[in-house]
Length: 470
Image (cartoon, rainbow, N blue to C red):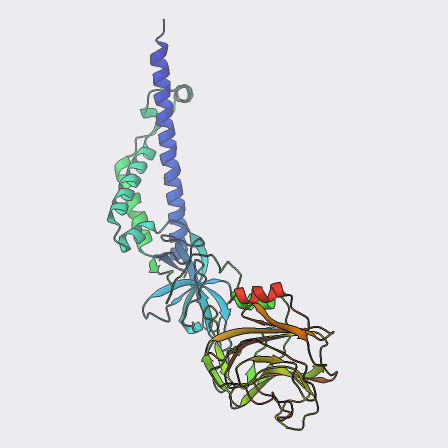
């Protein structure tokens, strides 16, 4: 009579050992595959590998991942939205792996980590780019990361487990009590008279592989995925291919007639149109370019307009019946003047024939819309905004002359306003040109930034969305 209990225990232990060996071999295969993916491109090509030491690129790239990058050639095109390896502009000698999210008007680039909703403060010069990320190998650099960050217990535990897994994976199933599979294999060998393969020295093989893997990963460089200045949250704002700052993306989603960030450096003549409609603006007069910008999350500069103006567009266009004016402004107590409007000329000739659709700040710091030559039906903000802070202004006007004024995302005034005229002309900011008869054409004594014009009426929900994207 057979001992069935002994048979079941033997079969159970055999299967358990089989599962352990298979798991060890699977781990060995994964480890070898990841290590080969991280090391072979470095051996066979001119690419370089970088072990990530910090987590500002999560969830796209985590600590211990290896980024394989191909060298960046001088004059090569920089693709917004891609991940690059570059020298940290704020910390000499340190490398960063971040995403390029904007090409600035001055030719430099804005970078950001995927784990944060603030961009890096210091702009990146293309000359500081080392490589373009082409391959991400997860986990392959964890041993180097643990060593670099002093996590010795993790490193020691990993080495012990890896050597143990390699030893188990190297065991031959013939060393175990015979199972039905082994018995079948032995019968086949007897029939073929094939001798069993020689036993391989498991310990030397496992140790050699561990040394090769660890040494190979150590041959890669290290790079931080940390912010050059500040970190406030872990929202994955900069998704792959986004390529735009949040405020810029919000404005462009509504297809503006023109969109001028006013980020040009001092001495520039032209203002780049970011709407895609090629309505380049031109600077005139006493403008102070390069002033601190309005939006901390959208690096850029502003324009001081204490005697100059920008004319938006090179050729006259038909005055729109319905429109929206959007801009950011900053004024100190006592400031006043013309923020933006539409006129039939480009210069500061005081005998201009037509000028309307303008918003201005009066001597008390309140915002006024609807006051132009021969017209005085206006709306005025209840409070003054000459407080030295940046404010977001949107004025919408329908073809029936119903106007809504929004400040910082909230409607503050509304009503019917003065009649507009039909003519061809130009949008302008900072200064009017038709003398003092309209009472609002003198230069604005403050700063302006991020000006957009729409030949449509922005819905209130979109005004709020633009404000929230700041």
